[in-house]
Image (cartoon, rainbow, N blue to C red; front, side):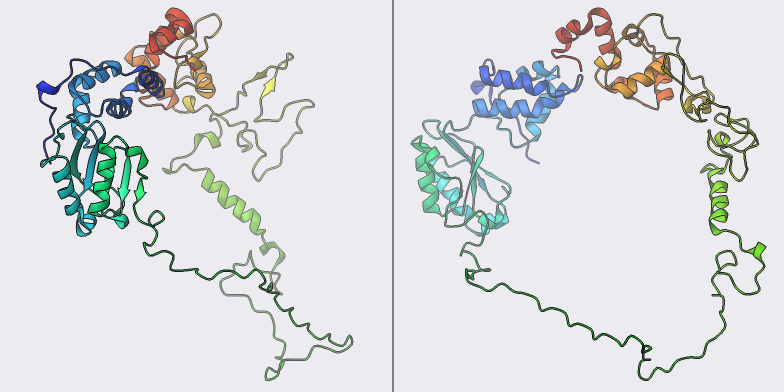
Length: 442
């Protein structure tokens, strides 16, 4: 891999700053990323800086690193890794990138390079006399069908001949590059055949008759009293006694003469019993306590599953008049729903308590203002005792581990920066959040 280094100090500017429009765009772009992830905007900002000045200077790298809170070396690594970033001054009117990969080379890319050498500079990455033009050879530009081709800034010019390429360079040299149409420089549509269409050449006739499929022949009606005739060569067979298929079980077989009635067990009931046996066992082979007597979610020794009907048994007593069905939420006289005591609690199933922390007194804060916490996650946090911003901000590493274990959110607290956001909200509310993070909380 070719080593890429910054330009000589003699051409490095003293400072860099985005113009007004680009500065506004950069602020908006950084705001697209969540808190703690703003450094992901480094490539868009470098590209916008290059579009503004034509190349990436040392001052550009340092300015963008300060904007994103990154070490200078990290931004330098990005700028020197990607060859799309120019690390030294380029022509102010045109920087030509000539594709030198095999398809373009076979179709005349070397002639285009010779044009660059004669009209711009003998060596790549050097400016012409007035600093308006420069060139370099690059790898595939992605239009092999239209070879040979060049790219000038963000546009490509394809199907080039040396003469047409010279005309394009002259136009850019004169400051009239906008007059040149990008894309194929011959009578070709995109990457279609250069000779024009080769298929579907027939012109549809406006008077062509519409095709109407023929109607299917009608079958002759059979005489009402006549019996259906047997096919020729296939005489009727004598009636035989029914025989049970050898792969059919007695339970699934139809009524067969001589089979006792008690042997005709319902297939649906047998399948239900087999399914119950499978449900009653966990994947690892251990009994599922939620389905057994005395476990969380078990209602009675009668075999009910979390409020469902008894499996294979009839209830001994009718439900009390006005009682809510088992397995549903009950409500008090005020109409507020309360939790069903028979509901399976996954935290309790693991042997822990439903409330991991003691919830502080007073109204709960709006935890949804913290990026990464939505309504469902807020409810789950409240259930384990986390209700206040200050409470979350004071969590220790051991407390964080308890939260992530109870909610099955390994690494989520640190990844979304919950503690820092909660500390800012506890200190000054949403106004302080906007001041610190530069945007509104959700």
